Image (cartoon, rainbow, N blue to C red; front, side, top):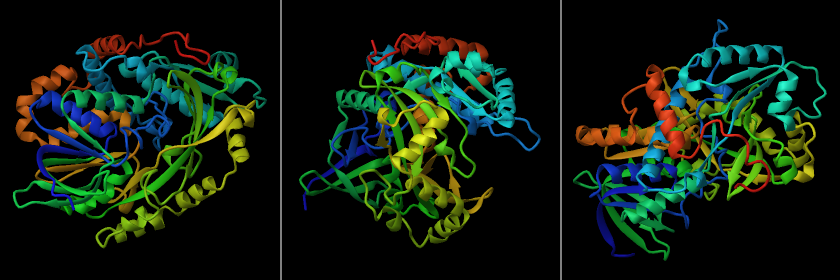
Length: 505
């Protein structure tokens, strides 16, 4: 047992995009605060934030059909699409601030312009997409969206998907040039390099094994370091941003807000193509509709990706099940997360979601050739030898009792759980996660530092000019922000596809 004991202002658990974002915000708002980070792996951004563990969509609801459900009367509910887009605009503003202040450099290392498209087949789905397009294209946040059900136009937009298609089934797509591909792994590493320059102590190979409240209301952590010794670290404020690993640590705090919450782990796989000839034929993120009974996170999509200065294609995700809460986790994670206070919530969720469980098991049993057959519904001429399987990150969906869904409701989204006194906050859930990290971390700041907010507000507005306003209600401000963030992030919205081919210039 080590005798090391330290006291600090803030401890962040997990070196992913959420801790990176919160740490960077706090260093701007309270430069004198001492911040420590503990990460059990040997570098930043290795779990959910890693570029191979998520789709890098820069979720802004430009193409994700599950954000625009059809109402019983046939109209389209665009509320969530507007909210998610607003939240991504907040991320763009904060990243632009960091670039303009030269706190981070080379935005093209983590964000690239890329058209976002939605694609549907069948008469009913084409009608749905047309209605969605008509509803969204009136909103300034979605300006520039195009719709087409003309096969010749679709061949222009998505040759790889349209070539070899023999069915006469009605097909339609929407396209918007202002989408992006975001490398959240690269962004996470860039932000942690910045934090180290700001004297934030980042400890890799350190696993938090215990969390308890001290008599003065601080939080004491037991941390096993890389040598196997256990250290004690005390902080006034604790943020648990350990991806799927957040739930067990939140449970250790014992706060009332941690009760009756469970987690349902879902794993994923992608097919990846690095063949330059195939890659050159596709330049977009194209989202389809989820199969009936499939969870929203399994919406099939064919994405152009920019990773390590190279262009590749990803198709998926194929959902699966593993009891681990992290890729680097334990097969006991799910069982150990069941506690007396959440066992009935978990059982209710299990009973309610039998079709989902069945679907995940079926997905898990697919062979590579069966996955290629699913790909061929998107890319008719796909050849198995051009594609390889990559295991994506683990996601832990939140299970809780809600008024709307009753006991054991499975939540699809990102949630902040914090104590009444604001001394501890944890992030749970999955998509749209990383894309909305700045918005979510501002929520944490609002909940946990109410006394400082008045003093901090001018600085927050400097970093995020739209703070406290809705861009959807301020079209002029949106146009101004869209132009300034595009310039700062070197996006030049609507940039031609000159990056075709293997290398990115």
